[in-house]
Image (cartoon, helix red, strand yellow):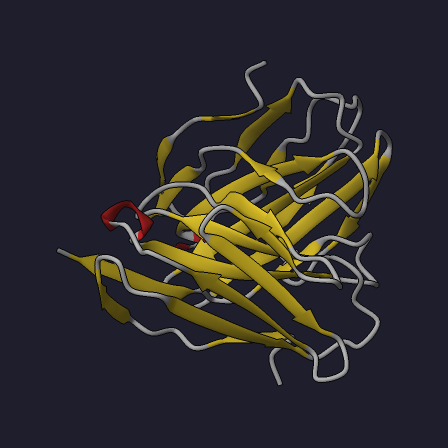
Length: 112
Length: 111
């Protein structure tokens, strides 16, 4: 099992560019989430999904879109990158609502 | 008021010491509780779940006090490898039970 795989590991974008952060898990987990982590702010929930075809917004969803067409994949799209989106992004998954998450290794994004 | 609050530390302790972290949460309806560990520039990793009756995993003991809405983590016989940031985590009732993370408590174990 690879667990939760995130790509890319590092990315530099220019303001206004768009991109997709990829997240895939091979554990057949129903629940997946995206978090961002900034110094002094902790982990903040961007979007989450409770199963294929079902997504919803978390605490900081503005500027991001998600979709969940399959159980395995949960991509995060930045629509028009802004410097405020410079952060470390973590994707996480778990089997049910009472389990802990397994995290991917993160994507370090810099927007210049 | 933040949903999950932790003392950021840092806690500097010598090897072999016992150290305790506390965490408070604001939503009395929360049902799942965890401690995660995060090393510098790494992803968070699940350390242990926290159960109502309290639970132990080797040198680590977790306690939950629902009445006072706090969670604790006790580390006995600290090792250098225990140096990390410890995150208190509580589920979010209204967000698909996604998890709400505290900002973490930094621990440095010194020789």
